[in-house]
Length: 322
Image 1: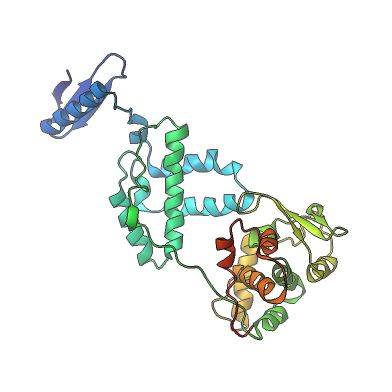
Image 2: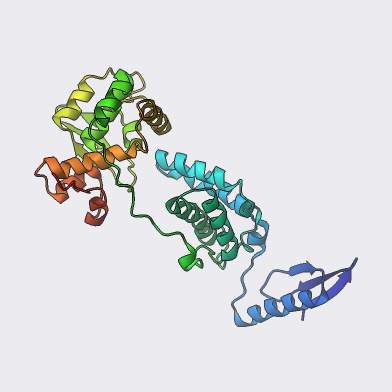
C-alpha cells in the first residue's frame, strides 16, 4: 500500500514495491496524491507501469539539445544546418519548457496556431512537428523512456495540410536579367543549377574530387534522399566547370547553401523579379528536361535524384504551348 503523508501543507505519496524502484510525488491536495498512488499501483499490478521519472525531468528543450548533440552529427552536412537551425528556433517557444511526459497534443495544437499566426506555411509547421516527433522517438528507443507516448502522432487531422508545392518557372527574360546582375561570381552557380537540376546543398558541397571531366559526370554525396548518385554532365554544365578556377580548398563554387540563398534573393530583388527562390531553378531545369529532350522519366529521375515518379512529376509542369 502507498503511504500518504502531509508535509508542510503538501501531500506526499510514496510507493515501495518489490521489483520496482521507489516512487514518490507531492501534491497540493490529498485526493490527488491518493489518485496518483492508486493509478501507479494498478499499473504495477497489471504490468503496464513505466518509469516516467526521466521524462518528467526532461523538458522538450532538453530533448532537443540532446538530440542535437547525439544524433545530428551523424546526418548529412546540409541536414545538420537545417535541423540545427530548426532546433534553435523551437527552443524559443514556450512549448520547449514543458516536460516530455506532460507534453500533449493540445500543447502542440496551440503551437501550431502560434506558428500559423506568424505567417509560416503548413509545410514549415509539419517540419517543426517532425523534429519534435524525432525527439520523442529517440527518447523511446535510446534514452530509456520506452513507455513515453508521442503526442505528435495523436494530432491526426490537426496537422497542417501539405501544400501541392511551388510551380514557379522562369518567365521570358528573367534568366537574362539574373545573369546580367549575377556577374562572373554567381552567374556560374545559376547556369550550373539549370544545367544539372542539382539542389542548393548539392551545389554548395560539390568538390573537384567528385567531378570527372573525362567521363563527363559528377558524384553527389549524402544527398537529400539519403543516397549518393552519379549525374551526367551536359555540354552546358561542362562549359561552366571549365570556366572556373580551382580553389585551394577543393570546393567547386566556394559558397555555402545559405550564401547561395541570400545571394539569389539579393540579385532577384535588384532586377525586380518577385517570388523567385534558388530552388525554383531546379524546378525549371527538370521541366526543361521534359520539354526539350527525349529522355525517359527514369533517366530524368536518375539525374534529379527523385526516387518515385510521383515526386518527379511534381516538378514537371509542362507549359501548354510547348
